[in-house]
Length: 199
Image (cartoon, rainbow, N blue to C red):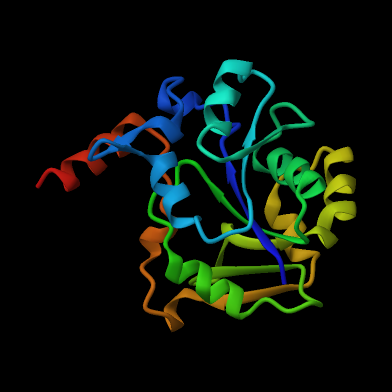
């Protein structure tokens, strides 16, 4: 079963004051570099960006060994990058995460892969019945329904998940911390993160 990896980086970063979240640093390493390091075992690592990224920026990411996919749809949230990337990737499955999730790890990925089967569209985690749509594996099988949702201006991944053949893994049944799903969205959250690392 061939699985690629996707990092979503096409958001507007409005809550981060316009700063590109993937380029924020912990101990001199950017979130993006940290995530790429975890994803090294995948056949391809894709980076989803919006149309506002310049050719120079795209070239810089390609020099990191990333396959850059430009969003087909503008400003519709994660669903746009997920759709564009599933449609254009070489693999039948993608592990999908975001550039503001610097704590993903190989243990998370291994748990997901161990539960991936040919007839399953999505494998993801939940905690206390809350589904985590990112840090999950998606099959190309979801593309037609995803397109239907986008055409109907329904952009929430949870609707896609609920109407697909998915496996829900309980975070409580593993040794994983829910920090793996933590995303850093605001300057305050980033400042708090830096304080924790500098203790």
